[in-house]
Image 1 (tube, rainbow, N blue to C red):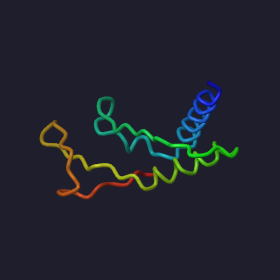
Image 2 (tube, rainbow, N blue to C red):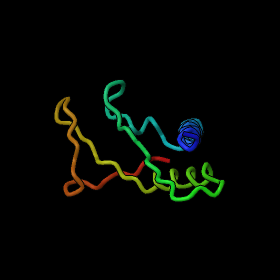
Image 3 (cartoon, rainbow, N blue to C red):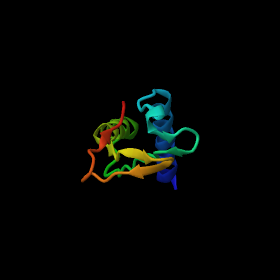
Image 4 (spheres, one colour):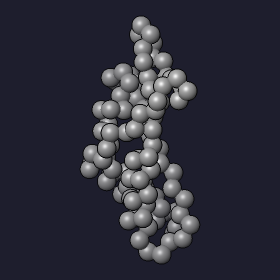
Length: 95
């Protein structure tokens, strides 16, 4: 319906804004160049739409990225090893 189109538009605007602004260092998401990368997805739940949904969603997305921590990865030979938070501290995104 009409609302789903609006939310798709907001999603497209957010995606373009975050990627084009280079808010996230995408190079820092690479584990093995050209082969393995971290994939980030932001899920937003809109409780009420008073008119500034794009602005509110943008702020929420950037704050979520700011608080996100990814697991550390090391290599044993050529095999990546993803470490739990118990063995290694999680790493914040480079914003």
